[in-house]
Image 1 (spheres, helix red, strand yellow):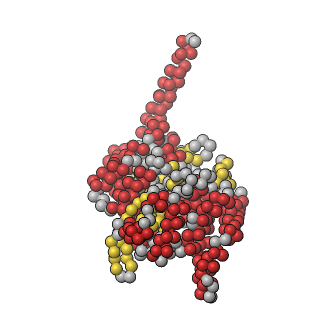
Image 2 (cartoon, helix red, strand yellow):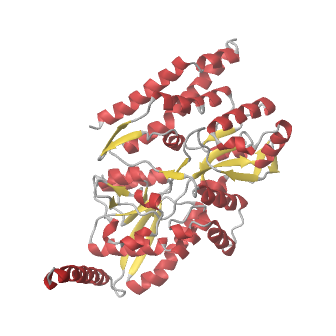
Image 3 (cartoon, one colour):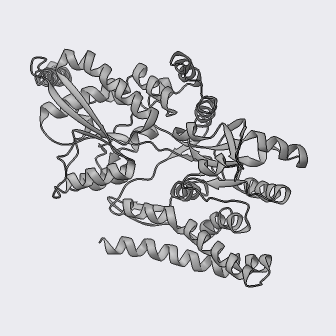
Amino acid sequence: MTKKTHLIPLVLCIAMITSSCSMLSDQNKLLDPEKPITITVWNYYNGTIKVKFDELVSRFNETIGAEQGIVVEAQSYGDVNELADAVFESANEEIGAMPMPDIFASYPDNAFRVDQRSELADLNDYFTKEELSGIREEFLSEGMFGDENALKILPIAKSTEVLYLNKTYWDVFAKKTGADLSSLSTWEGLAQTAKEYYESTGKPFFSVDANANFMLVSAMQLGEELYQYRGFEASLNFREDTAYRIWMNYYIPYVNGYYAKSGRFSSDDARTGAIAAYTGSTAGASYFPGQVESDGASTPIEVMALPYPHYEGGKAYAVQQGAGMCISKSDAAHEYAASVFLKWFIDVPQNVEFAAATGYLPVKTEALDADTVLKEMEKENITNGTVKKTIEAAIDMIQSYSLYGNKPFEESYELRSILETSLFEQVKHDLEVLERRVQAGEDRQAVIDELCTMDHFKSWYDDFTGRIQSEISRNR
Protein backbone atom coordinates (compact mmCIF):
# COMPACT_ATOMS: atom_id res chain seq x y z
CA MET A 1 0.00 0.00 0.00
CA THR A 2 1.45 3.42 -0.96
CA LYS A 3 1.87 6.34 1.39
CA LYS A 4 -0.75 8.17 -0.70
CA THR A 5 -3.24 5.39 0.06
CA HIS A 6 -2.46 5.63 3.76
CA LEU A 7 -3.17 9.34 3.62
CA ILE A 8 -6.65 9.03 2.10
CA PRO A 9 -8.51 8.04 5.34
CA LEU A 10 -6.63 10.72 7.25
CA VAL A 11 -7.52 13.39 4.69
CA LEU A 12 -11.18 12.31 4.73
CA CYS A 13 -11.25 12.37 8.53
CA ILE A 14 -9.73 15.85 8.64
CA ALA A 15 -12.20 17.00 6.01
CA MET A 16 -15.17 15.66 8.01
CA ILE A 17 -13.95 17.28 11.21
CA THR A 18 -13.31 20.56 9.40
CA SER A 19 -16.75 20.40 7.80
CA SER A 20 -18.40 19.65 11.15
CA CYS A 21 -16.57 22.47 12.89
CA SER A 22 -17.40 24.81 10.01
CA MET A 23 -21.10 23.87 10.23
CA LEU A 24 -21.13 24.43 13.99
CA SER A 25 -19.39 27.76 13.54
CA ASP A 26 -21.84 28.77 10.84
CA GLN A 27 -24.81 27.85 13.04
CA ASN A 28 -23.41 29.85 15.95
CA LYS A 29 -23.17 32.89 13.68
CA LEU A 30 -26.92 32.67 13.09
CA LEU A 31 -27.60 34.01 16.60
CA ASP A 32 -26.93 37.50 17.96
CA PRO A 33 -27.66 38.39 21.61
CA GLU A 34 -28.15 41.98 20.49
CA LYS A 35 -30.88 40.91 18.07
CA PRO A 36 -32.66 37.98 19.73
CA ILE A 37 -34.79 35.56 17.70
CA THR A 38 -38.28 34.71 19.00
CA ILE A 39 -39.23 31.03 18.93
CA THR A 40 -42.88 30.02 19.33
CA VAL A 41 -43.72 26.72 21.03
CA TRP A 42 -47.26 25.29 20.90
CA ASN A 43 -48.14 22.66 23.47
CA TYR A 44 -51.20 21.10 25.10
CA TYR A 45 -50.05 21.31 28.72
CA ASN A 46 -52.48 22.19 31.50
CA GLY A 47 -52.34 22.50 35.28
CA THR A 48 -49.10 21.61 37.01
CA ILE A 49 -47.53 20.45 33.73
CA LYS A 50 -48.08 23.87 32.14
CA VAL A 51 -46.77 25.64 35.24
CA LYS A 52 -43.54 23.63 35.23
CA PHE A 53 -43.04 23.94 31.46
CA ASP A 54 -43.55 27.72 31.58
CA GLU A 55 -41.14 27.93 34.51
CA LEU A 56 -38.45 26.09 32.57
CA VAL A 57 -39.06 28.26 29.49
CA SER A 58 -38.52 31.36 31.63
CA ARG A 59 -35.30 29.89 33.04
CA PHE A 60 -34.02 29.18 29.54
CA ASN A 61 -34.85 32.71 28.40
CA GLU A 62 -33.01 34.21 31.38
CA THR A 63 -29.88 32.08 30.90
CA ILE A 64 -28.98 30.29 27.65
CA GLY A 65 -31.52 32.31 25.68
CA ALA A 66 -30.15 35.64 26.91
CA GLU A 67 -26.57 34.53 26.25
CA GLN A 68 -27.22 33.38 22.68
CA GLY A 69 -30.09 35.61 21.57
CA ILE A 70 -33.17 33.34 21.79
CA VAL A 71 -36.55 34.18 23.30
CA VAL A 72 -38.97 31.28 23.64
CA GLU A 73 -42.70 32.03 23.79
CA ALA A 74 -44.95 29.13 24.87
CA GLN A 75 -48.64 28.89 24.01
CA SER A 76 -50.88 26.18 25.44
CA TYR A 77 -53.96 24.79 23.69
CA GLY A 78 -56.83 23.11 25.49
CA ASP A 79 -55.85 19.52 24.84
CA VAL A 80 -53.81 17.38 22.47
CA ASN A 81 -56.63 17.11 19.89
CA GLU A 82 -57.21 20.86 19.81
CA LEU A 83 -53.48 21.39 19.36
CA ALA A 84 -53.31 18.78 16.59
CA ASP A 85 -56.17 20.49 14.74
CA ALA A 86 -54.58 23.94 15.12
CA VAL A 87 -51.22 22.77 13.75
CA PHE A 88 -52.86 20.89 10.88
CA GLU A 89 -54.88 23.96 9.93
CA SER A 90 -51.68 26.04 9.95
CA ALA A 91 -49.90 23.45 7.81
CA ASN A 92 -52.77 23.63 5.31
CA GLU A 93 -52.70 27.44 5.42
CA GLU A 94 -56.42 27.51 6.09
CA ILE A 95 -58.22 30.83 6.31
CA GLY A 96 -57.92 32.24 9.83
CA ALA A 97 -55.18 29.80 10.85
CA MET A 98 -52.10 31.07 12.63
CA PRO A 99 -48.68 30.77 10.97
CA MET A 100 -46.86 27.52 11.72
CA PRO A 101 -45.14 27.59 15.12
CA ASP A 102 -41.38 27.06 15.26
CA ILE A 103 -41.88 24.11 17.64
CA PHE A 104 -45.01 22.14 18.43
CA ALA A 105 -45.83 19.12 20.56
CA SER A 106 -47.12 16.16 18.59
CA TYR A 107 -47.77 12.46 18.52
CA PRO A 108 -46.46 10.57 15.47
CA ASP A 109 -49.87 10.32 13.75
CA ASN A 110 -50.34 14.07 13.60
CA ALA A 111 -46.69 14.86 12.92
CA PHE A 112 -46.82 12.54 9.93
CA ARG A 113 -49.88 14.16 8.34
CA VAL A 114 -48.51 17.66 9.04
CA ASP A 115 -45.20 16.69 7.42
CA GLN A 116 -47.06 15.71 4.26
CA ARG A 117 -48.30 19.30 3.90
CA SER A 118 -45.68 21.47 5.57
CA GLU A 119 -42.28 19.83 5.85
CA LEU A 120 -40.77 19.34 9.28
CA ALA A 121 -37.07 19.72 9.97
CA ASP A 122 -34.92 16.60 10.15
CA LEU A 123 -33.48 16.84 13.64
CA ASN A 124 -30.49 14.75 12.58
CA ASP A 125 -29.22 18.03 11.08
CA TYR A 126 -29.07 19.63 14.52
CA PHE A 127 -28.33 16.78 16.94
CA THR A 128 -25.15 14.70 16.81
CA LYS A 129 -25.25 10.91 16.96
CA GLU A 130 -23.63 11.14 20.38
CA GLU A 131 -26.35 13.47 21.65
CA LEU A 132 -29.11 11.21 20.35
CA SER A 133 -27.49 7.99 21.61
CA GLY A 134 -28.21 9.02 25.18
CA ILE A 135 -31.98 8.77 24.59
CA ARG A 136 -33.74 5.45 25.16
CA GLU A 137 -33.97 3.70 21.79
CA GLU A 138 -37.75 3.13 21.71
CA PHE A 139 -38.38 6.78 22.60
CA LEU A 140 -36.16 7.96 19.75
CA SER A 141 -37.27 5.52 17.06
CA GLU A 142 -40.91 6.55 17.46
CA GLY A 143 -40.08 9.91 15.87
CA MET A 144 -38.27 8.51 12.81
CA PHE A 145 -40.12 8.55 9.49
CA GLY A 146 -39.44 6.86 6.18
CA ASP A 147 -36.72 4.67 4.73
CA GLU A 148 -34.01 7.21 5.54
CA ASN A 149 -35.12 7.39 9.20
CA ALA A 150 -35.41 11.15 9.23
CA LEU A 151 -35.91 12.25 12.83
CA LYS A 152 -39.01 14.44 12.83
CA ILE A 153 -40.00 14.21 16.53
CA LEU A 154 -37.69 14.68 19.50
CA PRO A 155 -38.87 12.89 22.66
CA ILE A 156 -38.87 15.31 25.56
CA ALA A 157 -40.88 13.42 28.20
CA LYS A 158 -42.54 10.04 27.89
CA SER A 159 -45.15 8.04 29.70
CA THR A 160 -46.54 4.55 29.68
CA GLU A 161 -49.55 2.88 31.28
CA VAL A 162 -49.81 1.04 34.58
CA LEU A 163 -52.59 -0.59 36.54
CA TYR A 164 -53.94 1.77 39.21
CA LEU A 165 -55.60 0.09 42.19
CA ASN A 166 -57.66 1.33 45.11
CA LYS A 167 -55.77 -0.69 47.72
CA THR A 168 -58.27 0.16 50.45
CA TYR A 169 -61.08 -1.52 48.52
CA TRP A 170 -58.77 -4.35 47.46
CA ASP A 171 -57.71 -5.19 51.03
CA VAL A 172 -61.32 -5.62 52.12
CA PHE A 173 -62.06 -7.80 49.10
CA ALA A 174 -58.86 -9.86 49.46
CA LYS A 175 -59.46 -10.49 53.15
CA LYS A 176 -62.94 -11.78 52.36
CA THR A 177 -62.08 -13.92 49.32
CA GLY A 178 -58.35 -14.66 49.55
CA ALA A 179 -57.68 -12.85 46.26
CA ASP A 180 -54.00 -12.31 45.46
CA LEU A 181 -52.41 -9.34 43.69
CA SER A 182 -50.55 -11.69 41.37
CA SER A 183 -53.85 -12.43 39.62
CA LEU A 184 -53.79 -8.88 38.24
CA SER A 185 -50.63 -9.47 36.22
CA THR A 186 -52.53 -11.04 33.27
CA TRP A 187 -55.66 -9.99 31.42
CA GLU A 188 -57.21 -13.38 32.03
CA GLY A 189 -56.47 -13.18 35.75
CA LEU A 190 -57.78 -9.63 35.90
CA ALA A 191 -61.05 -10.62 34.21
CA GLN A 192 -61.53 -13.56 36.57
CA THR A 193 -60.75 -11.39 39.60
CA ALA A 194 -63.21 -8.76 38.39
CA LYS A 195 -65.88 -11.46 38.15
CA GLU A 196 -65.18 -12.53 41.73
CA TYR A 197 -65.20 -8.91 42.89
CA TYR A 198 -68.57 -8.35 41.22
CA GLU A 199 -70.00 -11.47 42.83
CA SER A 200 -68.64 -10.40 46.23
CA THR A 201 -69.55 -6.70 46.17
CA GLY A 202 -72.15 -6.30 43.43
CA LYS A 203 -69.94 -3.63 41.84
CA PRO A 204 -67.68 -3.54 38.78
CA PHE A 205 -63.96 -3.75 39.43
CA PHE A 206 -62.06 -2.36 36.48
CA SER A 207 -61.95 -0.03 33.47
CA VAL A 208 -59.70 0.56 30.45
CA ASP A 209 -58.95 4.26 30.10
CA ALA A 210 -57.45 4.29 26.58
CA ASN A 211 -59.08 1.78 24.25
CA ALA A 212 -56.81 2.40 21.25
CA ASN A 213 -53.74 1.71 23.36
CA PHE A 214 -55.37 -1.46 24.66
CA MET A 215 -56.03 -2.71 21.13
CA LEU A 216 -52.56 -1.90 19.81
CA VAL A 217 -50.65 -3.30 22.77
CA SER A 218 -52.87 -6.38 23.04
CA ALA A 219 -52.00 -7.31 19.46
CA MET A 220 -48.29 -6.95 20.24
CA GLN A 221 -48.63 -9.03 23.40
CA LEU A 222 -50.34 -11.75 21.37
CA GLY A 223 -47.53 -11.86 18.85
CA GLU A 224 -48.53 -9.64 15.95
CA GLU A 225 -48.51 -5.95 15.14
CA LEU A 226 -51.96 -4.62 14.28
CA TYR A 227 -50.70 -3.22 10.98
CA GLN A 228 -48.31 -4.38 8.28
CA TYR A 229 -46.18 -1.57 6.89
CA ARG A 230 -44.97 -0.83 3.37
CA GLY A 231 -43.21 2.50 3.34
CA PHE A 232 -45.77 5.18 4.20
CA GLU A 233 -48.70 2.81 3.74
CA ALA A 234 -50.11 0.12 5.99
CA SER A 235 -52.71 -2.63 5.89
CA LEU A 236 -54.67 -4.28 8.68
CA ASN A 237 -53.02 -7.34 10.22
CA PHE A 238 -55.64 -8.48 12.73
CA ARG A 239 -56.29 -12.21 12.82
CA GLU A 240 -59.64 -13.45 14.09
CA ASP A 241 -58.07 -15.51 16.88
CA THR A 242 -56.20 -12.44 18.16
CA ALA A 243 -59.39 -10.39 18.02
CA TYR A 244 -61.26 -13.09 19.94
CA ARG A 245 -58.71 -13.08 22.80
CA ILE A 246 -59.19 -9.32 23.04
CA TRP A 247 -62.99 -9.68 22.90
CA MET A 248 -62.98 -12.27 25.68
CA ASN A 249 -60.96 -10.03 27.99
CA TYR A 250 -62.69 -6.76 27.18
CA TYR A 251 -66.22 -7.12 25.82
CA ILE A 252 -67.26 -10.13 27.93
CA PRO A 253 -66.31 -8.58 31.31
CA TYR A 254 -67.93 -5.25 30.37
CA VAL A 255 -71.23 -6.80 29.27
CA ASN A 256 -71.36 -8.94 32.40
CA GLY A 257 -70.87 -5.89 34.61
CA TYR A 258 -67.39 -6.84 35.84
CA TYR A 259 -65.92 -3.78 34.11
CA ALA A 260 -67.56 -0.36 33.76
CA LYS A 261 -66.85 3.12 32.48
CA SER A 262 -69.34 5.96 32.80
CA GLY A 263 -67.13 9.03 33.09
CA ARG A 264 -64.95 10.59 30.41
CA PHE A 265 -61.90 9.25 32.23
CA SER A 266 -61.62 6.15 34.37
CA SER A 267 -60.29 8.30 37.22
CA ASP A 268 -63.78 9.87 37.39
CA ASP A 269 -65.28 6.47 38.20
CA ALA A 270 -62.48 5.73 40.67
CA ARG A 271 -63.26 8.99 42.44
CA THR A 272 -66.85 7.93 43.11
CA GLY A 273 -65.85 4.38 44.07
CA ALA A 274 -67.72 2.98 41.04
CA ILE A 275 -64.60 0.97 40.16
CA ALA A 276 -61.54 -0.13 42.11
CA ALA A 277 -58.93 -0.25 39.35
CA TYR A 278 -58.07 0.91 35.85
CA THR A 279 -55.22 1.01 33.36
CA GLY A 280 -54.15 4.56 32.63
CA SER A 281 -51.26 6.81 31.75
CA THR A 282 -48.45 7.39 34.20
CA ALA A 283 -48.69 11.07 33.25
CA GLY A 284 -52.18 11.05 34.77
CA ALA A 285 -51.05 9.69 38.13
CA SER A 286 -52.05 12.83 39.98
CA TYR A 287 -55.66 12.33 38.86
CA PHE A 288 -56.09 9.07 40.75
CA PRO A 289 -58.08 10.28 43.77
CA GLY A 290 -56.73 10.13 47.29
CA GLN A 291 -60.31 9.74 48.51
CA VAL A 292 -63.61 8.32 47.35
CA GLU A 293 -66.52 10.75 47.27
CA SER A 294 -69.86 9.00 47.51
CA ASP A 295 -73.24 9.76 49.06
CA GLY A 296 -71.99 13.13 50.30
CA ALA A 297 -69.09 11.60 52.19
CA SER A 298 -65.36 11.64 51.45
CA THR A 299 -63.34 8.56 52.47
CA PRO A 300 -59.51 8.54 52.25
CA ILE A 301 -58.03 5.60 50.33
CA GLU A 302 -54.60 4.13 49.71
CA VAL A 303 -53.45 3.74 46.11
CA MET A 304 -51.20 1.18 44.41
CA ALA A 305 -49.54 1.25 40.98
CA LEU A 306 -48.89 -2.16 39.40
CA PRO A 307 -47.35 -3.28 36.08
CA TYR A 308 -49.52 -3.21 32.97
CA PRO A 309 -51.22 -6.62 32.50
CA HIS A 310 -50.28 -8.98 29.66
CA TYR A 311 -51.95 -12.07 28.21
CA GLU A 312 -51.20 -15.54 29.52
CA GLY A 313 -48.42 -16.92 27.36
CA GLY A 314 -48.03 -13.51 25.71
CA LYS A 315 -45.20 -11.02 25.65
CA ALA A 316 -44.78 -8.21 28.17
CA TYR A 317 -45.50 -5.05 26.18
CA ALA A 318 -46.72 -1.68 27.38
CA VAL A 319 -47.53 1.42 25.39
CA GLN A 320 -45.14 4.32 25.11
CA GLN A 321 -46.77 7.69 24.79
CA GLY A 322 -46.18 11.33 25.52
CA ALA A 323 -45.96 13.80 22.66
CA GLY A 324 -42.52 14.86 21.47
CA MET A 325 -41.53 18.15 19.87
CA CYS A 326 -41.28 18.90 16.14
CA ILE A 327 -39.42 21.79 14.52
CA SER A 328 -41.14 23.36 11.53
CA LYS A 329 -39.11 24.01 8.39
CA SER A 330 -38.52 27.76 8.18
CA ASP A 331 -35.09 29.37 7.99
CA ALA A 332 -31.68 28.30 9.31
CA ALA A 333 -31.67 30.76 12.20
CA HIS A 334 -35.09 29.81 13.60
CA GLU A 335 -34.53 26.09 13.14
CA TYR A 336 -31.16 26.26 14.88
CA ALA A 337 -32.52 28.41 17.72
CA ALA A 338 -35.35 25.91 18.20
CA SER A 339 -32.84 23.06 18.41
CA VAL A 340 -30.80 24.92 21.04
CA PHE A 341 -33.88 25.15 23.26
CA LEU A 342 -34.79 21.47 22.80
CA LYS A 343 -31.21 20.34 23.51
CA TRP A 344 -31.31 22.29 26.73
CA PHE A 345 -34.75 20.95 27.66
CA ILE A 346 -33.81 17.27 27.36
CA ASP A 347 -30.54 17.71 29.23
CA VAL A 348 -30.71 15.66 32.41
CA PRO A 349 -31.12 18.35 35.12
CA GLN A 350 -34.02 20.12 33.40
CA ASN A 351 -35.59 16.96 32.00
CA VAL A 352 -35.58 15.16 35.35
CA GLU A 353 -37.06 18.24 37.00
CA PHE A 354 -39.86 18.35 34.43
CA ALA A 355 -40.51 14.62 34.82
CA ALA A 356 -40.55 14.75 38.60
CA ALA A 357 -43.05 17.58 38.66
CA THR A 358 -45.43 16.08 36.12
CA GLY A 359 -45.36 12.28 36.43
CA TYR A 360 -43.67 11.86 33.05
CA LEU A 361 -40.50 9.86 32.50
CA PRO A 362 -37.21 11.52 31.48
CA VAL A 363 -36.02 10.49 28.04
CA LYS A 364 -32.32 9.86 28.59
CA THR A 365 -31.31 6.37 29.69
CA GLU A 366 -29.07 7.69 32.46
CA ALA A 367 -32.03 9.49 34.03
CA LEU A 368 -34.43 6.51 33.91
CA ASP A 369 -33.70 5.68 37.50
CA ALA A 370 -36.35 5.81 40.20
CA ASP A 371 -33.99 7.13 42.88
CA THR A 372 -32.90 9.99 40.62
CA VAL A 373 -36.47 11.08 39.92
CA LEU A 374 -37.65 10.59 43.49
CA LYS A 375 -34.78 12.69 44.86
CA GLU A 376 -35.79 15.45 42.46
CA MET A 377 -39.38 15.15 43.70
CA GLU A 378 -38.18 15.66 47.27
CA LYS A 379 -36.16 18.66 46.14
CA GLU A 380 -39.25 20.10 44.45
CA ASN A 381 -41.34 19.31 47.56
CA ILE A 382 -43.71 17.11 45.56
CA THR A 383 -45.65 15.05 48.08
CA ASN A 384 -48.28 13.32 45.94
CA GLY A 385 -47.93 9.69 46.98
CA THR A 386 -49.63 8.31 43.88
CA VAL A 387 -47.17 10.07 41.57
CA LYS A 388 -44.24 8.67 43.56
CA LYS A 389 -45.62 5.12 43.48
CA THR A 390 -46.36 5.45 39.78
CA ILE A 391 -42.85 6.62 38.93
CA GLU A 392 -41.37 3.71 40.89
CA ALA A 393 -43.69 1.16 39.28
CA ALA A 394 -43.21 2.51 35.75
CA ILE A 395 -39.42 2.71 35.84
CA ASP A 396 -39.22 -0.76 37.36
CA MET A 397 -41.64 -2.10 34.74
CA ILE A 398 -39.84 -0.74 31.69
CA GLN A 399 -36.65 -2.52 32.71
CA SER A 400 -38.28 -5.83 31.75
CA TYR A 401 -41.09 -4.74 29.38
CA SER A 402 -40.84 -3.75 25.73
CA LEU A 403 -42.44 -0.41 24.90
CA TYR A 404 -44.61 -0.02 21.82
CA GLY A 405 -45.73 2.96 19.80
CA ASN A 406 -47.26 2.28 16.40
CA LYS A 407 -45.59 3.80 13.35
CA PRO A 408 -47.45 6.61 11.59
CA PHE A 409 -48.78 6.14 8.07
CA GLU A 410 -51.19 7.81 5.65
CA GLU A 411 -54.43 7.00 7.52
CA SER A 412 -53.09 6.39 11.02
CA TYR A 413 -54.58 9.55 12.54
CA GLU A 414 -58.08 8.67 11.32
CA LEU A 415 -57.79 4.97 12.15
CA ARG A 416 -56.85 5.65 15.75
CA SER A 417 -60.33 7.05 16.37
CA ILE A 418 -61.82 3.75 15.13
CA LEU A 419 -59.54 1.82 17.49
CA GLU A 420 -60.60 4.08 20.32
CA THR A 421 -64.34 3.79 19.79
CA SER A 422 -65.25 0.55 18.00
CA LEU A 423 -65.17 -2.00 20.80
CA PHE A 424 -66.34 0.40 23.51
CA GLU A 425 -69.26 1.64 21.39
CA GLN A 426 -70.26 -1.99 20.88
CA VAL A 427 -70.26 -2.44 24.65
CA LYS A 428 -72.34 0.69 25.22
CA HIS A 429 -74.85 -0.27 22.55
CA ASP A 430 -75.25 -3.81 23.85
CA LEU A 431 -75.62 -2.71 27.47
CA GLU A 432 -78.49 -0.47 26.36
CA VAL A 433 -80.02 -3.41 24.50
CA LEU A 434 -79.59 -5.55 27.61
CA GLU A 435 -81.40 -3.07 29.85
CA ARG A 436 -84.28 -2.62 27.41
CA ARG A 437 -84.82 -6.34 27.08
CA VAL A 438 -84.61 -6.93 30.84
CA GLN A 439 -87.14 -4.16 31.42
CA ALA A 440 -89.36 -5.86 28.86
CA GLY A 441 -89.33 -8.96 31.05
CA GLU A 442 -86.48 -11.08 29.63
CA ASP A 443 -84.03 -12.92 31.87
CA ARG A 444 -80.82 -10.89 32.28
CA GLN A 445 -78.41 -13.81 32.14
CA ALA A 446 -80.15 -15.27 29.09
CA VAL A 447 -79.72 -11.97 27.23
CA ILE A 448 -76.06 -11.72 28.31
CA ASP A 449 -75.42 -15.26 27.08
CA GLU A 450 -76.94 -14.34 23.72
CA LEU A 451 -74.73 -11.25 23.44
CA CYS A 452 -71.63 -13.30 24.25
CA THR A 453 -72.00 -15.81 21.42
CA MET A 454 -69.37 -16.43 18.76
CA ASP A 455 -71.77 -15.16 16.10
CA HIS A 456 -72.04 -11.81 17.86
CA PHE A 457 -68.26 -11.58 18.11
CA LYS A 458 -67.89 -12.32 14.40
CA SER A 459 -70.44 -9.64 13.58
CA TRP A 460 -68.35 -7.05 15.47
CA TYR A 461 -65.09 -8.36 13.99
CA ASP A 462 -66.39 -8.14 10.43
CA ASP A 463 -67.71 -4.62 11.04
CA PHE A 464 -64.46 -3.46 12.66
CA THR A 465 -62.16 -4.85 9.97
CA GLY A 466 -64.49 -3.54 7.28
CA ARG A 467 -64.40 -0.01 8.69
CA ILE A 468 -60.61 -0.07 8.90
CA GLN A 469 -60.18 -1.37 5.37
CA SER A 470 -62.77 1.06 4.03
CA GLU A 471 -60.95 4.01 5.60
CA ILE A 472 -57.64 2.83 4.13
CA SER A 473 -59.18 2.38 0.66
CA ARG A 474 -60.94 5.76 0.80
CA ASN A 475 -57.62 7.58 1.20
CA ARG A 476 -55.82 5.77 -1.66
